[in-house]
Structure formats: structure tokens, C-alpha cells
Image (cartoon, rainbow, N blue to C red; front, side, top):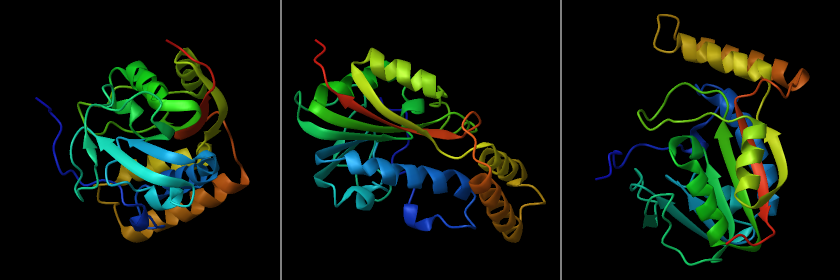
Length: 228
């Protein structure tokens, strides 16, 4: 029996603006995913796709965008219902695999990466994102946080060659996002305050970027060798 709730509201990238509670997180994530999208090509499999919030971002790069998830999304955008660790696709059937903000929710994340490797063609590309800082969410299915070195180890252990790892925002973005998480739901929770925090900390983050303190990573890796 699948314990996850069906039809849960998922991210809609069109709704993210300076008044959004997660603006500081998404502004850098979206920017780095857009940069990573240049590697995408051919048939794309979006694992844990939800409502496919990045379909438009990749539309000019790929000829087909297939989404799979463990439950149907709120807007019924999932093409195939299946576990991320048991993909019902033949070997080497996709050119690009996209996994955004999913890996922390998969207890057997190494099997997830092995499945991604299996369904990719030789020289196929994996574009992956996942958090280093974030409060508990989708409980109890929230298992891990990852450093850039953790991502590199996991991917290389699965047979991938890592092309690049980008941190999404630095210490100022992280600080501002943690502040918003702290005041959300309190008596200090006012829209004008959220807007002010987003603007101030985005400004500071742009002018004083750091790598060691970050909320999230976007990773690009390639399947360049065969693993049985």
C-alpha cells in the first residue's frame, strides 16, 4: 500500500515571486536548473515529476517530457505511476533524466540513482537537485540532506561522471530563508516583512556569494561507462 497522499498540491514555478515564502530558495534553484538545462536533449524522464514545474524550462531542449511519480499530482500531470526505485522502462530508453527535490524523500536513494543510470543511453545526462538545508517536510518521508561531496560520492558510486555541482545560494540566502521559516505562522508573519527579508537577503547574497553555506545543489552528471 502506498502511504503517500494522492493529489497533493505541488510546486508551480509561475507562483514564485518576491512575496513567496521560498523565494530565496527558488530564485537560485531555478537559475541553476536553467543553466543546467543546456545539457538536456532527446527524450527526458522526469522522476518524481509532480506537476512538471520545469517542463517549460526544458521544452526547447528535449523532444519528449515523460513524468513518473509514486502518486498522481494535483493537476494530473504524472504520465506513469511507479516507485522511483522500480522504473517500468527498458534499459537505455532516455537521453536525459531529471530528478528535482526528490532524492531526500527516497529511503533507498542509491537504487534511485542506479535506476536513473539504467534507463539512460550511453552519454545520457542526469540533472539532479537536492537540499543541504531545509526543514522537515512531507513527513515521515524525509530521510536525507546532502553535501556536494556526498552527491559526488553517490553518483560516482552509481557509475556516473560528474560534470558540475552548483550550490544554489550562499550564507545570506540561507540566513534569510531560515529567518522566514522562523517567523512563518507567528505574530510577525506579515507579507510586507516577507518581501523585505527576501529583497534584503537576495541583495546580500548576490554581493557576497559563498559556497560552503548553502540550501541546495544542482548536479549534472553523464553516463559514460557501462556498469552491469
